[in-house]
Amino acid sequence: MHGGAWMLYSVFLDQRLVCFAVLLFFIPVGGDYCPPSCLCARDSGTVTCRGGEHPGVPGAIPDWASTLILRGNNLTTLPRWAFCPSGARRPLVTLSLSHNGIRVIEPHAFQGLTSLLVLDLSHNRLVSISPGVFSGLLELRSLNFNQSLAPLAAVQLVNALSLGEHLRSLHRLDLAGNHLTSVPLGIHMSNLHTLVLTNNSIQTVGRDHVATLYQRPRMRIYLSLNPFWCGCELEAFYSWLRNSSQVPDVGALVCSGPGARQGVRLEHLQEEELGCADQDLEAVSYVFLGLVLALIGVVFLMVLYLNREGIKRWLNNIREACRDQMEVYHYRYEQDSDPRLANVAV
Ligand SMILES: *[C@@H]1O[C@H](CO)[C@@H](O)[C@H](O)[C@H]1NC(C)=O
Ligand SMILES: *[C@@H]1O[C@H](CO)[C@@H](O)[C@H](O)[C@H]1NC(C)=O
Ligand SMILES: *[C@@H]1O[C@H](CO)[C@@H](O)[C@H](O)[C@H]1NC(C)=O
Ligand SMILES: *[C@@H]1O[C@H](CO)[C@@H](O)[C@H](O)[C@H]1NC(C)=O
Image (cartoon, rainbow, N blue to C red; front, side):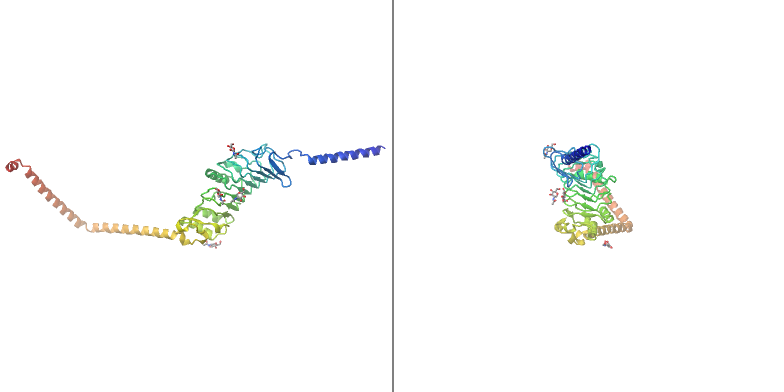
């Protein structure tokens, strides 16, 4: 009797357990919920937030989230510790912040995101990037800044990238469409494999930068849609390009000038067309002209020197002739001013 009652009780207990387990399964517990204005896909670990009624960075993000996509939010400023306000670490792997009108990124904005591999900041309007902005991103592999930078921000970004070893794992840097005028190669990122610089305003790549390119044979650099100025200044880069497989889009590099070279593909350009030979010739002809002028000068001085006796005599003659002439004038003047002679005339 007692045993039967106990059995009944344990079945009841099991049911309670099952019920509890079912409850556990269906009712979100702890940070396991979806922030307002966001879509949560737990199986892919993705949280997607599109502003709407709740703009800004969501305060609490589910713990399981590995990908966070914020889009169309009017963020303007990305504050310090934006994604880990409590100071905890967050296991995000991918963070996409494109199209959010971000203008300012404060230092330590990404602090706490120690597992982040991909950071997309493309299509924003950045005017200010502080030097310590990437601190804490120890694992970051891919960084997108395409069509995102105002001119000053571009300089600041290069500074931030050059600072310290925060981004020692960075493999890919996308800087397309930012009106950059030079190749940012001051960056000391030894692991950088891919540098995307398409659709910028790069006209030439100077000799010092070409030297850096020679030193980084593993790096791929994309350069199409830049207005290359195919004058003699481009010679070093041109020579490097001819013998390099580091520019995968080399077939799409086109000259923007000068003159008839506009629209010519760099690949099809002949070395003579860069005009360095003309420039050399010009330099040679200037040197030649200078030599001829110097020679004429020397000959002139020699003639003067050799004829110094004759010249002295000649100068004396002239002086004497002048003195004679002056005396004649003097005599006439005295005669003209003689009052007696004037009376005679009257
Ligand atoms: C973004 O916010 C600023 C003010 O913070 C406002 O002036 C602007 O109109 C907003 N833009 C959009 C697209 O909502
Ligand atoms: C710019 O970034 C976006 C991601 O926002 C990417 O899909 C696109 O391919 C990039 N464009 C270029 C030209 O690199
Ligand atoms: C190039 O960049 C400009 C802005 O910098 C953008 O408006 C344009 O669409 C881009 N072009 C291409 C082909 O990506
Ligand atoms: C081109 O590269 C090869 C090997 O990378 C080298 O042996 C050769 O001298 C280079 N030629 C020129 C013109 O730089």
